[in-house]
Image (cartoon, rainbow, N blue to C red; front, side):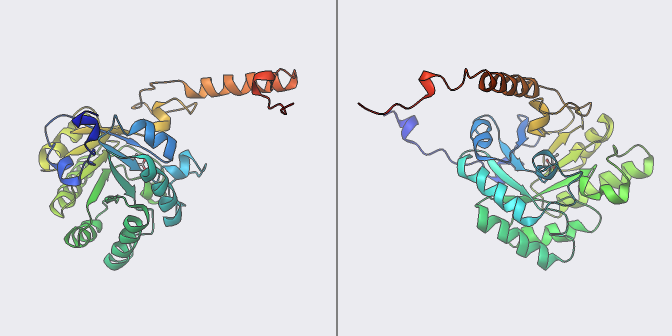
Length: 274
Ligand code: KIV
C-alpha cells in the first residue's frame, strides 16, 4: 500500500477556509443525505446542511418551519459519509435569536449530536453579538448576509437585496459586523455584482456567493437546483444535470415494465435450490 493510500485524509477546518480569502475559489454545496454527501465530499471544500432541506426535501413553503431535530437528523446522515469537506450545519429559525445562551446551547447540541465542526446563522442586526458569544466559547460560526431566507415573512418574499443605497449600506454593515464578531466566512446571497465585490473587499474573511456573482471568494448552490431536480430554478442557478428528466424517464419505464410483467425477469428472481 502506498504512503498516499495509508495516510488518513484530514477534514478541512474552519481556519483553513478562512485562510483561503482571495485565494483558490472555495467550492461549497448543500448536502442533506448520506449517499449524496459521499458523492460530493471528494469535490467540495465545504458541505452545508442547509435549512433549505425544509423546502428541498420536506416540501415546506419556506425555511421558517424547519426544526432543530430536522437539522440534527440530516447533519448526522451527512457526517456519516463526508470525510474530507468541512461540514457546516444551519441553525434553524428560532434556535439562536432569543438569547445568546439559547444560541450557544443549541449550537453545542448540534455539534455534539452530529459531530459537525461548525454552524451557520443568518446575520441580522442583533446576531453579531450572538456570533461573538459562540466563537469566544469555541464554536466556529459561518455568517449569512444579503437575502436572508429566514426573514421571508417580514420581508414579504424572497427578494434580492441592496437595490437602494440604504439597503447597500445595511448589507455592508451587517457583513462587517459579522466578520468582526469572528465568523470564519460568510454566505452572501441574492445581491448585485457591485455589492458582492464591495462586501468581499470590506471583510477579511471569505465570502461565499449564491446569486451574488463571481465577485465572491467561493460559491455555493442548492445541490438539487444544480442537478436539475426542479422544474423552476432562480436565474443564478446553472443546471449541471437533468435529474428531473432522468428520474421521471426511469420511473415511467419501471411502471411500464411492471404493468407488462417484464419486471422482475429471471435475472432479478430467486429460485429455490433443487
Ligand atoms: O439553507 C441553505 O441552503 C443556505 C444556502 C442557500 C446558502 O443557506
